Image 1 (tube, rainbow, N blue to C red):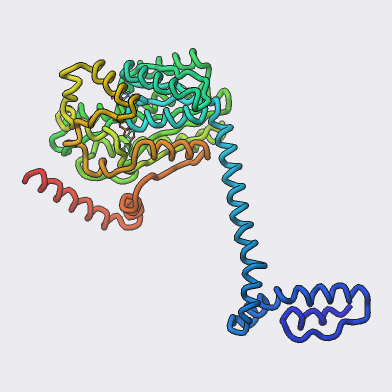
Image 2: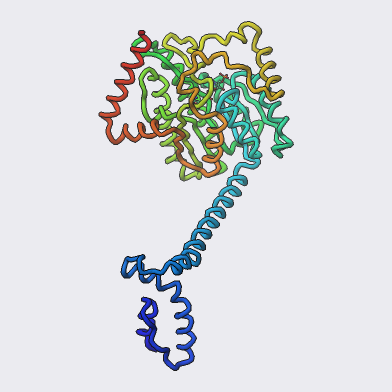
Length: 402
Ligand SMILES: NC(=O)c1ccc[n+]([C@@H]2O[C@H](COP(=O)([O-])OP(=O)(O)OC[C@H]3O[C@@H](n4cnc5c(N)ncnc54)[C@H](OP(=O)(O)O)[C@@H]3O)[C@@H](O)[C@H]2O)c1
């Protein structure tokens, strides 16, 4: 067979008459039909000019090649997402998920998100009443969420290492094993390094760093035994960059990032996953609950609780939520950072955490453009980054003094 016959056809030249071989006649007629679609492609690639392609042929090309290609890609993407969702659902359904700091903010929203995904929850916190309120709220949603597991609660203070270890033992005794541990609890800090006593630095480190690592270490052996487990830690953008007047907080989050990066590498051989989530600002009471240089609460006293008591405040909040009136008006807005108010909602970030866990991501940065750029700037041009931070410190000091 003479293959040289094919070349002019493919390049759109006039096709020579077909040889009288019946096999060839079949191939040749197919080629002349197909050349309608092949020719414009061949021309585009051989001469690089679209001008020679008649308009009708270009439309044909669009409908015969580009549209199916686009539809195929969309279909493949949809199939990929469907498989990803199915895998995620299977991973989270009935998994034992331990969440620290479940009494408020991001921890509470994570509890709702993982409960909706069918997980068996172990909710940890310092305030038993608030934990029970959350259990009631989740149980009320149980039918809708098709989650038959009643959450289990454990009360302990993360800054007390001994109680952290006994809490881990209690969890293993009661639920048998832990599939996913979410180290979420934490406190923030506001103050100058010069005015801050070492006791405040230690308090922040104990809650944000020593507590979570003690809890993780206490639960790890049971995960290693099962060659299965997933450790998640809620760090912060400030685990990657330090901003002025947040020294203790940024230091605790840098330490957290470093520890869990090491853990990820060391746990690979046991097939235990580690996910570090680094959010930017979230609309929670973190800044209100932050400790100051003298150890007092940045947001001052929670005056409704002081006036009418914790129990009545929490009952009112619960009642207001049930009537779908939302939370009680936030009485700390006056001291809540402007950045925090403009941040993402806790529910939004909880969904990011859920997806990151479901997809076994190693690291997630949940921040806007500026903080994300700052993270890269710290590595690519440290000098420029330090200049920006010094200017920020000057501005903040000036604003405080005026
Ligand atoms: N909000 C933000 O802008 C932001 C940004 C980046 C990262 N994060 C991180 O997100 C995590 C959750 O914070 P959030 O924003 O949801 O703030 P939040 O509403 O103040 O919640 C903090 C949680 O941690 C618990 N907690 C604090 N100290 C504890 C201790 N010693 N022992 C046990 N539990 C303790 C609190 O329990 P109580 O109710 O008993 O106080 C509360 O449940 C933190 O790790 C924080 O660093 C927050």
